[in-house]
Structure formats: structure tokens, C-alpha cells
Image 1 (tube, one colour):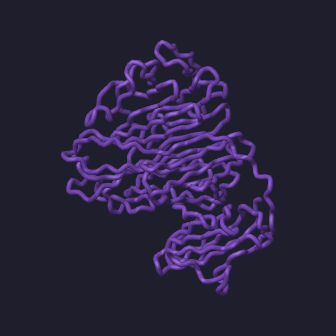
Image 2 (cartoon, helix red, strand yellow; image 1 turned 120 degrees about the vertical axis):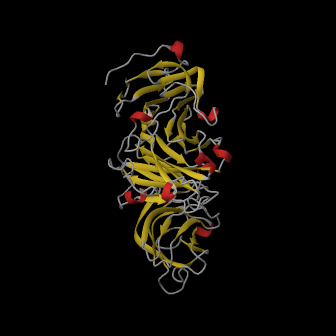
Image 3 (tube, helix red, strand yellow; image 1 turned 135 degrees about the vertical axis):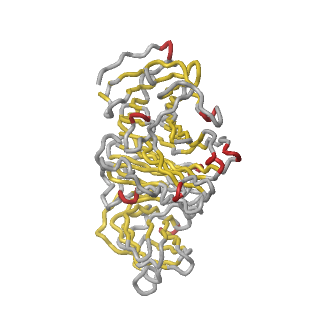
Length: 481
């Protein structure tokens, strides 16, 4: 890749350095531009490339790569490879026979921004980036590429794409405190189908390589601050008002990467606003596979096929990929006059790594709970739909009263119907995120670290129909003091 000179600051806000190579070598993706911000003592060092050069069979919008925070690699790639939209039934055949579309994210559309400081890059210092959101219903402007705007307190990258009458606007805004706000803006020019309610879904893909691509782990973070580590590939489903947060780390790294869904991103566990809508989950943790950049295969139906990527691979001490869904509901706008510019997407925070636990005690695997056994404090009956059952963990299997949390393997078996269970410290509030999801008759297991509450206990809440049941097995293999 040919190096480029530093761009003249007369056309840029002070503090930007562009080049094809930097202190950390060439960008890993072809056609990408390297950027450090600010020039003196860079906080962020990364590469980006425009939607027209993005990865995936259908493109993936404005793509970031090789993202470093204070010199430490945190994200290898961040983009949006899957877009789909679902319509309510309508007389205009919007969405076709399946009332849905799979959209592309590589076709750039011009917008207002000036000056252009190099081909395909605009600083916005004289004319800030102005998309169709500021020109409701119609396109305006002649700049094609990526706006890179330095406000002094943040660095914002913006592009604009078209897919038919839709206008999709990817935005990445980076802050000096380690925050990246990812945004997907779904809007349209005036069009007849805008008159009918429809639901946009964007699937963000984060190849999170904390301090390198090996030895990463993912913890789900609960509202009370407790965490549960994922052991194998799985998905996560939110139910309002809760939204999932995950933390990806690596042994020895000075940082962890936290990814949080936001209130406006929707929840797959809620009743959906469009009939037969297709969100199946809100997050996925997967082992890296270079063939899993996107799931597009010219399907006649539109739902994301990310569950097909889950094949039981370990994600504890692996190269990790996170997929995160964000949704934007567009109510029908009279006459097809487009006004809605819904903005959704997760928040990424690079945080100092928490102190390494020094008081973990290993135990020989020991079964504490098995509800298939006769009725008793640690046996039957099975967990009942809508119920909460608590088990005192301390004093069992060699776990002392001083234990604060326990490392366990959780197994559910013989569920009467599909559902999920959540786990929380005894005496605490029931979280809205599940630790195990299951289908009727399915046996599933997951490793977890359970924070103990009142009396050294852990509580289990069961989401099943009122008459439903599921058996629970809890095997402990260690504890923290």
C-alpha cells in the first residue's frame, strides 16, 4: 500500500493525521485509510474504508479496522454486514410476497460536506456533514465518501448509502475517554412504501481482538454488576426494559471492551410491532470464522441466519466475534412523505481491566442441585413456569460461608416447552437477561459464575407457560472469596 503525506491542516480541524501506514503498520483491509486522533499523543489509532469497499456479499457500510486505544489493539473490525426490513401487510406489495427485504450496504449516495481534503474524505469544517435527515424526503449535496469531523472532544465518521428509496447512514463517533458510539440511521426519500409501517434491523459485527486475537473471553454483565462467562457459542435475547451488556477481555490486557445495547435498539423478547417480524435474538457470541462475515445467500426470505453459525465451539479463551442487533421502527408516514430518521446502535467502551481474582478455589466437580431427584431442598420438584426457586449454596460441596460467588455448570433438561431461565443473587432483583434458553424437550448446558446473595444463596427464575416445567442441574467446580 502506498503511503500518503500528512494532509494540510488548512482544510482540517487540528489534530488529525491521515496516512496509509502508521506506527502499527499497514491497514489490514485493502482500500482503507489510516487515521490517528489527535496527532499529539494519539488516543485512537485505526483504519476505515468507505461502504463501496466494505466487506461481505452485500457490503457492510462504513467499516472500521485495526482499532487501537492508547496503543493496545481492541477491535480488529467493526461493521454492519446484515440489513433487513419487515413491512406490515399492505396493498402496495411493499416487501414483496414475504413483506420483507434484504438490503445492501455498499452503494454510496452523495450528501453535503466541505471541504474535500483528499479524494473521498471531507473534514466538514466549512460545511458540516448534512445527510438526507437534514433534507427530509430528498437528496442533496455532491460529496461522495466519508466525512471525518473533529469537534475537539470527539471524532465522528459519517457516510450515506442508498438501497432503493431507503437511505442508510452509518456513523462512528469516538471520544477520548474510550467510548465509541455506533449509530445506524434508517431513513428514506419520499416514496409510496414509506406510507406503510415497517421495521428496520441492523446487525453489527465486532471482531473484538483485545490485545490480540487469542485468549479472549466474554462476560455478560448484569445490572447489579455481577457477570456470567460464556463457555460456548450462544445467543442472547433481551426483554424490555433491560438491554444486554457484554465485556470482552483477555488475560494480561490493560483493557476490556464493553458493548452495551441501548433502550432504542429494541428487544427480541418483546411483542414485535410488526406482525410476523423476524428478530430471533439481540446478541451472539461466536468463535471467529473467516467465512462468517455475513449470512447472505440470495434467500427468498429475509431473517438473519446467525443461529446457523452456532456450532458448539468454545468462546472461553478464543478469538471472539460479537454480533449485536439494533432495530428502528418506522410508523407509516402519510402520503409517503419521509420524515423519520431513527438512530440506533450499541455503545462501546474501552475500560481498564478489573483486578485479577486472587482467591479462586478449585473444587472437584460436585452436584449441588438436581431437581430430577426426590423432593427436597436440593431436589425436586422441577422448576415451574413463572416461579422463582432459591438454593443455599454455601455449606454444600465444600463451599464455605465466606464464598462470594461460585463457578458452576448449569444444565436444563426435559422442558415441557420453549423458554429460558435467569439466575441472580438470592434476595436480589430478577434480571431481564437469560442464562440459558431452550426449546421443548431440549437438554442444554452453560458455564457461569454465580454471585451469591442472602444466606449464601442463588435464585433461579423460570420463563415458561404457567403449567410448564423444566428440570435443573447445578454442578459446582470452584468458588471465589
